[in-house]
Length: 602
Image (cartoon, rainbow, N blue to C red; front, side):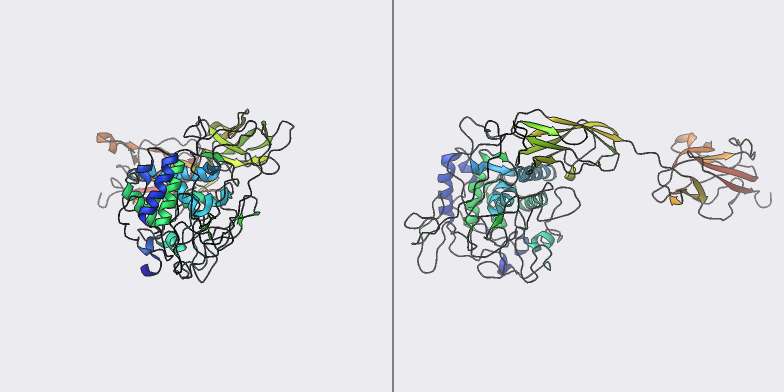
């Protein structure tokens, strides 16, 4: 299998030296001091990665290179770009804008791996560079509030025609094709790598948003999986050699390495957040396959599901590509060009499709609360109504496409999906931004959900959140699980766990019910703690006190099935019939008889 898809099957890759020269020209113009740390040096390429750890199977990818100018506007910083007055939308270089949810996924993956594998030193900008090249940041951020793509992003059929030959490995589960595999999702994982290719054989798939699923179509899951993959083998991505090895293991092509490193250098100089669905869409593709809504070509869906121009389906020429008939000159930092200067290479100019720029949203001047201000839920449950606001302009009309961030403020266990304390949502055509389902934690108390407009200075909208404590479990009946008579010899003990009871409420098992067990006198009118007869040992005591008789226990609780096994019961020298009384706070009572016999021959 390694011979089939462990390497790129397309021919004529540019040499390492050409890639280095092109990237050096790019980074020298936009990122002084960064070029040396990210340029592919003139040295032998690392060995191809094993086939069972390939990510995209040598599938198609976008070959567009970043602009030569710096992504940071004059006077800007490495943080968010500037904003246009009244819009709240970043105005840094267009290509430096990354859709809000996708950007959050890159940074969340970086934070997770910094904790689990700090020696890898994974920068989120590397994930962004790969995400840009593999899928154009999930087709310009065409994802829902959970980070799942609105439509599948599929690479070409890997049938050996211009790409690797990978017969189906997942029964079409991820790519819908029962004959051949396709690269899937924002980070273009082939199914076999996602589900089987990991070091433990369980695949590289990951759950990045904490919903209990590993979905290659979810940008949080896919970016975390990509991060683990890049860090595999103890790599330190601050070391140039390891960085190059990691990128080449993703797609073994010097052109691919050059393209990813170009975007990596570009993003290191600064990015800014743009609303989901409005990211700049790349155009040119490598290879000649045909796919569905993704890197292989064809129309690509935007956030509203409408098709956007994305190439002809045959793919643009990749930099440095050659043909058996006539060699082409190696590409410069701006991509591949023909003799007449037209993009695409060759003697005949190939028209380059131009993405339709997203419509500029109306100026946002206010956020208005929709629904109740107060949100209440019981610990461990979900809030019935999610926080919701409407973005409005100065005339009170709704503003579509605005980014609204919901943040949990205060000491609380409440969380959004993925254990997140903040989420960014894009307003719809009606100007509404609805936060994802909010789950109350186990801690009771008050907190605040604050809605703010991303990139705009407008008053925030606060929601008052309250988590109520869980009501104490109830039980209206106690019963023994066995009718066996309980007998022991004086001075000895009853069998271990001799007394087991079950608590129920309205006929159903009652979990977590507190039960009090007391050895009582035989007086039905006034049962009080007995001073003689059977007893428990002092729980938790040490030294001489651990054997001290105790005839009342209060820290007893039924398990998930409503069952409770009492601690071992001992006897003193007294014989006869004694009573063990079990009670609950709701008034359920059970009396158990304990028979103590004299020793044989006494």
